[in-house]
Image 1 (cartoon, each protein chain N blue to C red):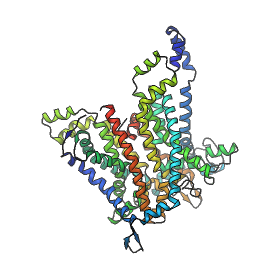
Image 2 (image 1 turned 90 degrees about the vertical axis):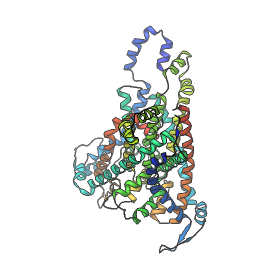
Image 3 (image 1 turned 180 degrees about the vertical axis):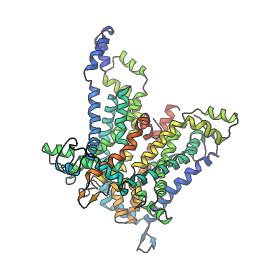
Length: 290
Length: 290
């Protein structure tokens, strides 16, 4: 609002040099944002800081940056199968889940965005309740269900369990993007003699490519960050990294350096793609609305 | 968009329906079964009627957990919503710094939830954490594993750190959709900064803010992983929220009947809030005229 007040106080002719001087002086907005971003970054910096220290230094001396820089913690993780298999397991079920969710969600989202049919609103609402369902309610029944059909401790079990919230999420996000595509495009394609599958793959999919990207990203993230179900449904062969991390307490106490390094490595996938999805974060969390 | 009536659209929904039925309806029916039966072991069950529900409704344990849960949700909403709006108002509108802020603010949203817990577990420790160490150096008697008040403060600050960006990003999306003409008109009328906020920005943000509040309420209402990793629900039961209590009951003590009755009541509350959420979403869609 400094714009308005300065414009009001002085004629427009001298407003130009004022903006030049104002650029040098820190504005209130910059201070607020600076403080907020500092608040966000400090804990993450501290984790990074600890991951680059030896345990002796972590426990011995309190220092704001690593005095003797070491990558030993990362080495431990990348060479010990019980650690790096956690990442591999997580990645396997997350990718499986993302693929399944998108495949089933695409046609459904198209149906919701284009047609009205018996029970469509109820169904759309029911999907939402599953996105909102507390995993704690489902932990025990899932355990029994997947044990009884012999899928306990397999990647597919976790991938299917995560469909509980990721399929509804994908349907809602994709529907939000699809409704932005004019219906005339569909009709023209049908007149031109395209069959439904040909139209869907050749014409429609490219039009909502960004929507598919966003839905895939959010399926990936929500499956990646979930702990309760993935921990309940696995023991050894498909144990995710999140569960491995909760058991770092050894005979010599907690191995803080390795724990911190493992944490930093789990942040990486999100951090790598964050730049490309930065304008869609709000839209994805708000289920394709906004 | 006016939709065509087409009952065949059901075929497009079918894959989703089957998958979600498998991962939601079957487990939920298991829960219903447990909620109305009792067992002496050996997999022999008999009808128990509504006695588990009566037990749970009379137990202090559930009401205490619910009370803590509501208090927690209320506090984090009271902090995150105003703070999120403040941050959104101060974010740069375009250019490098806008992208920079978006990327940094999105980062906490994409960190696995158990790592969020780990980050604050480390950050708050008096011996090795920056926050705990600083507070101790300033003379505060801070210990989040022993002191109830400190535990609450830490859990709340952790949630604020984790999720305020979501509120801010949603509010920011709402702000950006306001046409410049509104601000120009306000300038001509010499409206104060507060008047611009109160009569232009706030009404235009109302829709997305409603989404943000509901999303935050739902997600905080089923929070599990972060406090579980940070405090394990302690000290005592001080930070045992609904999900933590439920998992303790179902997977820790294997009290199937009470846990199932608890689950169903929990789920009903979630359904009710989901309905509000759905209504808000669909009215928003209509208002935008898409």
